[in-house]
Amino acid sequence: MTEPTAAPADEPRLSAKTMTELHEIAARYPQARSALLPMLHLVQSDAGCVTTAGIEACAEILHLTAAEVAAVATFYTMYKRRPIGDYHVGVCTNTLCAIMGGDVIFERLKDHLDVGNDETSEDGKITLEHVECNAACDYAPVVMVNWEFFDNQTPESAVQLVDTLRSGEEVQATRGARICTWREAERVLAGFPDNRADEGPAAGPASLAGLELARREGWRAPSGNGIPGAKPSGPVEAAERADTRRAEAETKVDESEAETKGGPDA
Ligand code: FES
Image 1 (cartoon, protein in one colour):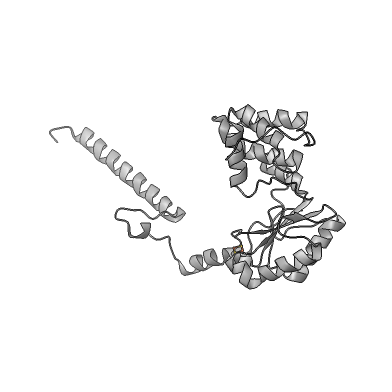
Image 2 (cartoon, helix red, strand yellow; image 1 turned 120 degrees about the horizontal axis):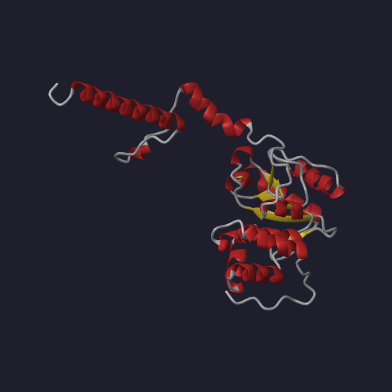
């Protein structure tokens, strides 16, 4: 990792408001350097990507080197070094989504938008990227817009989705909020809520199927995977252990009171 050079002259500077908010985020953490990840999201919200100026600002506030900040910004895929369009569209092409149609969706969107991977459509609206598993395999193939889920997609529905986004019409995620712009979403990830967190269903039937089956069959969490002495870890087991401890404590108190009343010679 080389030390980033000075910010290019044509690179947009961070606004005064962003600089104030970067300090605000840093002050939230007992160890200021823990604030780096949300701070980088705020930089993206302002500048459209992690700029050299953004790296330098984070480094100065957190007393890190620019190389340390750049190392983080280039490690995690949610941080972008090139500007993102109004909407980041991620098509899952990991194994399950791929065989369920994710590869075909990605190819169709590349043709439709006339872009390659990690490129932005000419109108600046859509940045297309193939992404790895989004832990939504039960709704494969999955497309994400600014990290909100669009489940059970087809090539046709994905094309319709990006066209609706480009038209400026309001779009609602399958399991999540109305879609805002990528920069607005980055601001939320920086820790400035937009009060949309409770919009839309959080979990669908496919995600809850296992839980429902376990409840119906009376299945419980396994007891520590065969590890000697390990205790079951589910909420039911935790409640039972608490009851047992309470009963044991009450028994001890009763015995102690009986001894006190009877005296040492009783
Ligand atoms: S493989 Fe696509 S969400 Fe898991």
